[in-house]
Image (cartoon, rainbow, N blue to C red; front, side):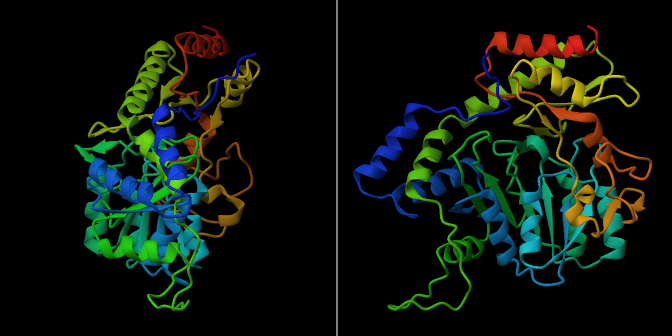
Length: 390
């Protein structure tokens, strides 16, 4: 039975051309012409200012923490409904994470919940805000609040490359932005990421740290702890080839989302993930939620599709529900949510009234592979409709 993937890589001949150049010139180390060119081309595409190509989006986030000097006890606000990589680098540096709930309009950080967090923590060291599933957050509202307090912003655009807000690329609004080129992202280098900033000192420092922080001396001297985080010239060649097709990928992702939305518009219990009216989302993953009280549950849909070898994924489990972060503060629009007994079940109880928890319990990610044929989409849609008795 044919496998239909959630979001798999799509390769072209362009990647092989750039990779072949790396082999032909013996540039297979974690530096070289492809790395330099990939950074330059990303700067030109996004308008980010400066870029540092790295081994992963997580590495980019970690070095962003180093650039902002996050250390033991420093409070960092983070999106709650996101993948763990968004916030784990704060813990690497022994910072104190405080999680901010989502709002329903975009599923991203709630400005009202952010205000509540500032009431208790008026001077956080930084804030990490994500653009979930490629949908831009309420950037103007969030940035207005952050600027009042002078808090540096790390913008996690791992899922949002090519998404724009009021015509400007996501990842370019904060002090530092990051992108991911993991295998399932809108373009891939198999594994890799990039840290970007208008402040060249940040990207220079990131490059320095990513190559083991060797001081500019003839001998090997180190005044900082460094990391092996630099992107290789081979991997960067794949990225250069992929970048040529980014807008094509975005158009196909948006077509998939529109197809699902039209196919399910007569089923009142299905709601597609919302898109920011002030933005242009890349629709990296198309997601749906099921109305509370409906007899159909997300597992029912995922199980029916799995029987046909069709891949799906649950919505990210919010960070405040993760056992590893059970003791961290968490803020909703209504205020601080108590920590006690918060992490006691995946499927929801009366004790968790958060928007992120609600979206998690009622949602799933649908197959969003740009190689899906019309027949693939028809099979997916018919299967989902059948689960709902349509």
